[in-house]
Length: 92
Image (cartoon, rainbow, N blue to C red; front, top):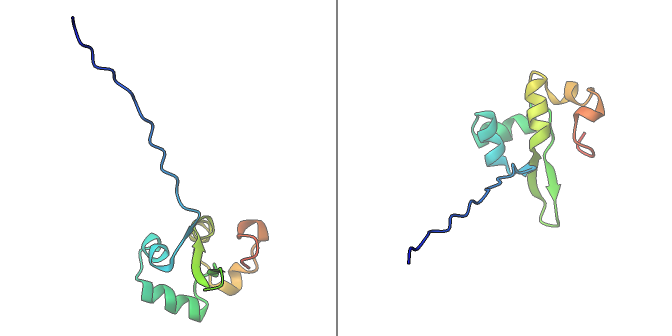
């Protein structure tokens, strides 16, 4: 009797997160977390971080970061003047 091996294929689906913490946001932008914090305080980065939950966990919207970079990384004042559909709802 011949034994056959049953092969099964698995599809691995890796979804990109919608929100990331400051360290991951900085990594995406190619800067240090301290630079991201400084830019946020000075208003040099357009997207504002979201504060989630009672503890106020700080997260950035990945789509908004990507759109901000594609727009040329304008400072927050100019970013807030862009069309709202380019920014994440409730974040501008």
